[in-house]
Image 1 (tube, chains in turn blue, yellow):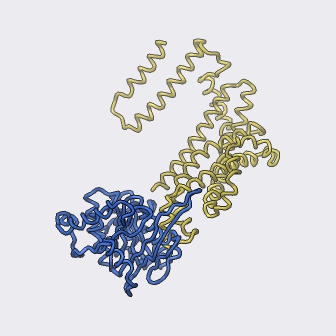
Image 2: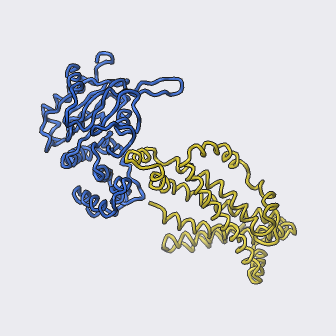
Image 3: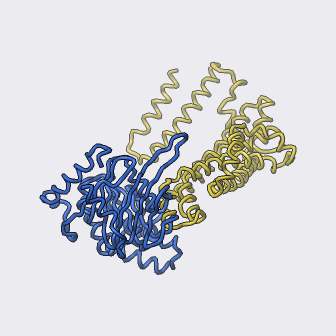
Length: 272
Length: 266
């Protein structure tokens, strides 16, 4: 497993890598203490690929997420998007969190248009893009509704539309479904996977839900406990289109992946 | 006591019919006031409490009739309301703007912090003598007192409201490449709005305190002056009329804030 991780993460940069994390390390100083959140993490995200990052809780997943989004500068190493170093948040990376972060005073339409508005796109054009997304993903008729009147699942769908609307290079998903009930979560996993695939987007999914990682990703990167290093990288060789998250649960290949990733997470620190 | 019980029983029997809930509540509210006033009047009549210490409802109504008929009450109420409203608008709007702007300038906010805390802790009424020296005993000093009190409350609440906006929303705006200015306009101002409106509510009360205390200290007109003057003369019925008029002014101002709040709700 470790050999696999080494081989996969140290291969030379492929031309089609849309995002590259190169020896990223992050440490914080909190008062007198020096906390190392991430020791050394490297990976590449290929164009059109969904990469899941799983790890034990508190392993620095969110820190890594912030570094990729350009919200935090790594202490060591760097992150590149489309060959350019991520030095500050530039709008190349769109993200979606557990919280939908919709502006409650704005309509669905105005929420979807937020990213375009920040970029200064023409209002009429933004409106067209947003309306197309709203119609395509089953919220037609709700464009003037306020988020408070929508269900949790609908709100998260608005959040993914907002992310898609400004056409980022990479979509980051940080535990986007963990606040939803089980049924809605499975439905949205399938929905969001499909939406990302339809737009040909590359995505990174940070999650602690192994099942979600296998259901949505092409590859699963397993991190060690804090300070995080790459423990393993699994290629999920399941048909990408039409992966039914419910049927998948009974699939023997799914169960096999699940067991292997589970074992990777269970490894005591220091053996990686 | 038996007469009192009879009054209560009588008013109780009146609502047994099926009435719309809002009307029923309104009738009960009027009944509550009527019962209290009747009890007060009876307590005076039977000599349980001294009229020179409390006044009496029948006297209050008579006094109110006189003061309404000669126009004095309306003139005083309008003046005090105007002082409170002008001070409220000036202080609250400027204060909210400053409090929100402090989000844009974290260094200034940090520098001002201890001063704001000290000013907030200071009973602002202590400033009234200074303000009367600066602005005179006319209407402008009352507006200034109301404005200063409401200003400080508004600055602190608006600043707090801006701080309470979800940090993840600010991060989202950053990740979209938004400038701090754009984030302020798009997320901070609307996000802080519920706080700012809650300060409006507090400030209605503070603005009235400012206007009335200003009139107590130095004035020749207004409800505060009227209450103070009547109190000195032991004309307690007039004092009660003034208090009731102040309550009416406060209710009207709160009503206006309610309408505003409903329009700002999301």
